View 1 (cartoon, rainbow, N blue to C red):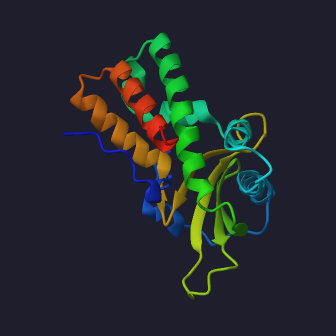
View 2: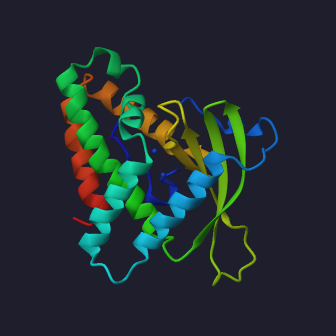
Amino acid sequence: MRFVPIPRRTCLATMLAFSAALLAGPAFAAANPAEDFVQDNIHKGLELLNNKQLSTEQRRVQFESFLLGLTDMKRIADFTLGQYRRTASPADLAAFDGAFQNYAVAVYQSYFAKYAGQTLKVTGSQTRAADDFIVATQLLDSSDHSGQQPLEVDFRVRTDAGGKPVVVDFSVAGIWLALEERDQFTSFLGQNNGNIHTLITHLSDLAKQFRGG
């Protein structure tokens, strides 16, 4: 079976062992550092992508730097390998981490670039543990008068690495990117004898497609 990349519209459909039932837990809590972290940083990312004074390449480079400071990319990469991470060599894991980072940056930028003119509003959060939060947000478009509900984008924020908040996954309409990627990647590896180098090559090709060549 051919590996099918996650559609751009559902990317977070987008980067942890989630299910749709995850958001059916306790009521959303009062404001917390995770909410402030998402509100401040995602807003900065949208502003960066909307900065027409920068060239396309400058926006790409600056967004990549911004994103890598916001997310725990290695943690996400390791998760997406599923059971294949346990048998991979350190060299293969390092090579995959690099390829995944390149791919993920291209995917995230492609997705958020479509919403660069919109604003992000935090609507609440769920505390899953003392260092684990789901922050719910809406993307608001002031020019949209259709009456449709704003797009909901949720972020999973962890603070278990020295107390610094980092994003470890995000979703659109309850579909979590990292979980989708894990299903896709492990299926692909299962069809290719667990060859991580084949997956690395495929991710490199996908990253080029998301960047338009």
